[in-house]
Length: 253
Image (cartoon, rainbow, N blue to C red; front, side):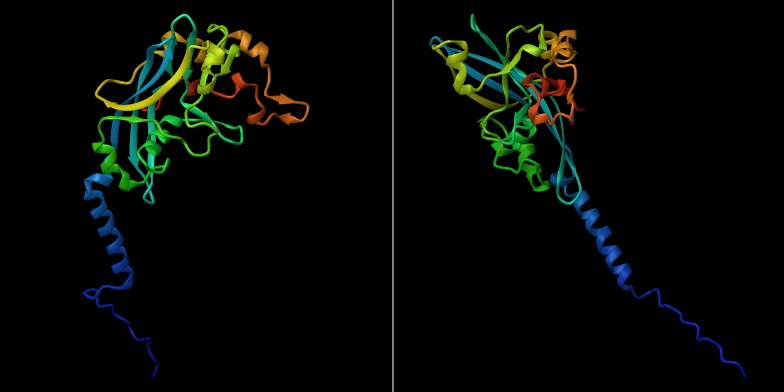
């Protein structure tokens, strides 16, 4: 007489641990997908305005950026933007360009400051979280730009040019240095974010095309980012080398 292995039959009417866990995960995903504040992309247009006082007269420049916040994994969000530098003309004194960039305390250049600084202004983490979506969807009004952590200044990088036809003549202008650079009667006043229904602007491609397609003299001035020891660290670049065209103008969506 031979012994036979018993046949084990599973009662499929009783849920297994795997079935319970899998069902719970699927149910949670369905629940989150149905929670509109967290599952839907938020797109807002924001006007960035900068003001200066020139001999007692307030002048300002502005640009509209589009920011798109997209739900991501693990409670985070992805951010895309259509943004450009803000142009501030100072009559008879020069022009300031406020870049979509900042320089960290370590001297390294960083692009994409507008979306991060916008969140910091509203008291949110610069990387964003899903729980921020309801606020981002409903915010209205005008807000003074607040500091971006990690930078030596509270504001994005501001630059000017000795010759706007030559990218290599770009230099940094800090807000407190306006009187020194543009005249004793010129001072920085402030910068604001304001939600708007206006479309993102495209001033830079017309006003400063050299920022998007550098002139030949730029490559003559800075022929390489290498020396005899290899690649030069980006924090040691000459100032005009530190930033790509995306800090002047970018179309992210």
